[in-house]
Amino acid sequence: MLILKYLFLFHLSNSFGLKTPRTLKTPTTKQKKYTQLLEDRNINLVVAHGPAGTGKSWLACKVAIEELKSNHIKKIVLTRPVVPVEDENLGFLPGTIDEKMNPWIQPLYDIFIDEKSKSELNSLLKSGKIEIVPIGFMRGRTFADTFVIADEMQNSSPTQMKMILTRMGENSKIVVNGDTSQCDLKIEENGLKNFISIVNKHYENLYEMYNNKIGIVEFDIKDVKRSEFVQNILEIYEK
Image 1 (tube, rainbow, N blue to C red):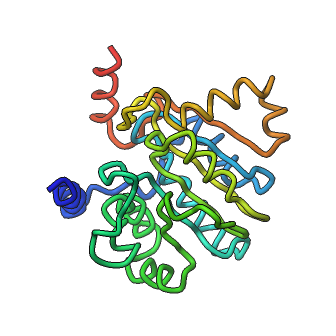
Image 2 (cartoon, rainbow, N blue to C red):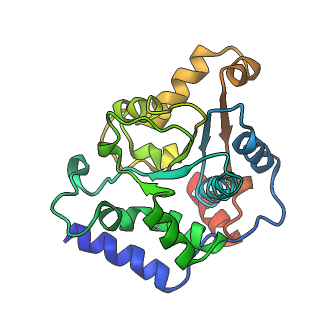
């Protein structure tokens, strides 16, 4: 019943066309900084955290497509914690890995469809240029010439976060997104919050961090571009 509930909610949202906007007409200073980090090929890891609607996923997908078009990378990998399914055991669900992950990856699919088309997305999936990899299936893999987008990582454990970050091979970038205030896990510290804390303690300044090929952006309510309504709702919850 829980799986059916989540499938229903995601397909309902798609039926009403609730997709990420195609452009950010007036990007904020932080969104510009985030885009620069995404496009900087000297940066291997970009961490973006903050409220929903700030363009974290949309900008990452947009730059990933541009990198694939330019042949700088060979594939895009999408991953996301599967919270409703205990231990991410998707085996009992029918279909391929892509089909099993579809309810959780659908928001990212919507972004790719906005940028390209559904047929182009299906073609990229069939050719393996876009690959869906559940976190539980990443162990033992190495991603070279790859743009990895790890979404909603506030729902990962510290162990999962470390495992994902250590999958990166040559000529690859990983983008870790999430909102530390929206964790669905019943644990003391999630993987995203834990990693940000470790990085802040390890590096004395941003220059030292960038020198080690890491960039972090923290968004706030002022960066919300999804709609004025969403911004108002977030402000209500903060008060």
